[in-house]
Image (cartoon, rainbow, N blue to C red):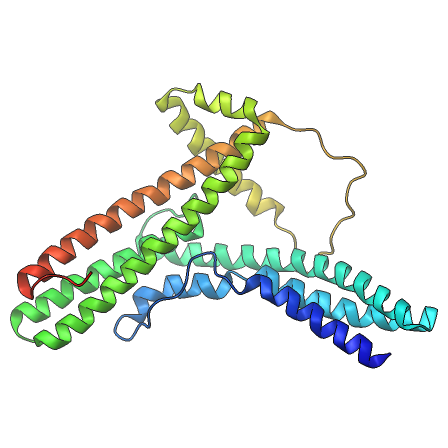
Length: 294
């Protein structure tokens, strides 16, 4: 019986861990040798993205062990142990997910405060991805300007200049991929909302550009305020599911749509700035060294 439970537990944990193998920010393609401080916002996003999943896995594993023990004692059978493990894993996983979401929220808030100081601007209405991208882009811009000055003055040789430039280019390329993946995820979610809540999309589409911009700003502020007041405590247990689903609030759905559009707009602005920088860097590299690598 113990062997069966052990195998079940291993398979369960392996299955749950497999969900977090693929990064939502795209594959990591570079090693930061010269400018780790510029790549740090991206690497930190990668490190923190699976906080909720990890907590759920730990909770499920613990729940499975306890559930298996209870099931085995109460039924004195392998089947009872397996059933108890499954029930314990489900309850533990849900509890771990609640804790994980709270931890992720705390991490994002802390990083946004740091990014606000680095950017010297308000980041409270930005997503962490947008703020991280702006910090990384600012850092690479400063480092490229310094790199160019060192090479032009003769303080750096051509070989080292190329190596440093290649890392900056690779970092900006990965940053661009991260923005693309994040924007795509929002667009997919927006499509789901569009299909499910046609009336709310009709309301948004009917807005004038000026009214829509004001509404997006208001919805974003409201969303941030709700996030700050509704975040669960790290030790909070999951609440029981309501017996009946809550009625659809079209005003709330409209606000969520506006928040998604505002986020896409912000990310689009950073992406344009990034593309402009890459074009400038490539032109200056070509002037100093030759054609930039593709």
